[in-house]
Amino acid sequence: MASAAVLWFGDFMSAVPLRNNKAAVSAARTVTVLGATGSIGDSTMDLLRAARDRYQVEALTANTNVQGLAKLAREFGARFAAVADPDRLSELKDALAGTRTECGAGESAIIEAAARPADWVMAAVSGAAGLKPALAAVDRGASVALANKECLVCAGDFFMQRAAKAGACILPADSEHNALFQALGSGNREELVRVIITASGGPFRTWASADIEQAASDAGAGVETPELEHGTEDHHRFRLDDEQGA
Image (cartoon, rainbow, N blue to C red; front, side, top):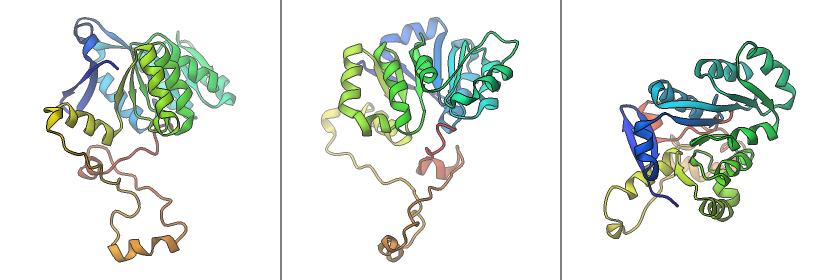
């Protein structure tokens, strides 16, 4: 797998593969955002918005949020927009009438978006539904910022083997994984003894130890995940990843 660097611009993060570093500085890069209307997608669009001269949007996708997708496609002049719900194609076409943006709907359209020729792909479709699109980006050797943990949970070895075969660059975009990625690259690897990953916030983060011991007796206690606002102290300490594919 190609090595990569993570660059910080104020409050925004840009993951740039070292092999493409000179190209990133001298020319605009094409970008596809899978899950553009979710929380990770929203943060990604803010990054692109802050550096419009550096990026050209190739494709955007959303799960069901047609109006949000169309708004972003218009704003960024996306060449292709796709909604996962196959019954929403007409609505998407109407919302993008008068533009040059091509439209698609259904799983095949999401995969098509990932397969289009973008230099860099943000893979932020939540759940196992994100695996096929991420693989489509990987198979053409793209740089893929992976915010979808299920790709590795469901098919980790298979996914990474495909990436290695295609020469794709996988960059961890999920908060905990990216923190580890940066930490591992900040010093001498030989000095590392062990890495401890703490649990996410979850519904038990404010519970007393005695209450947690009894949690198994409450069938619904562990179902809800807290929603934390991006940019707050809580967000930096705990993850917000359940709305990525909205």
